[in-house]
Length: 91
Image (cartoon, rainbow, N blue to C red; front, side):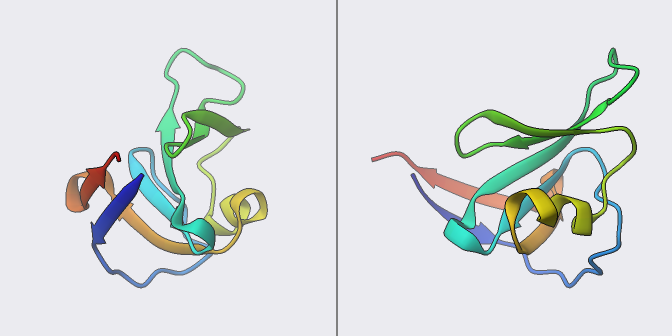
């Protein structure tokens, strides 16, 4: 899968990543989504790898970038999904 990303924003790694935000790593530029499972009571926040459609981690509270980086490596971009333009090419 090839893709082009058009979004740049600096961020603090202690900032919390809100549900619906897209996280892109430095290594292999994998794409992740932080989501809220409304029916889940113990660990409602989930980190999903959109590159392979796998659940990476569940969180009790909204995760910080630092917490996310401990699972997926250095973060390159954090962006609200509605502010990110992503062009996918499946070839």
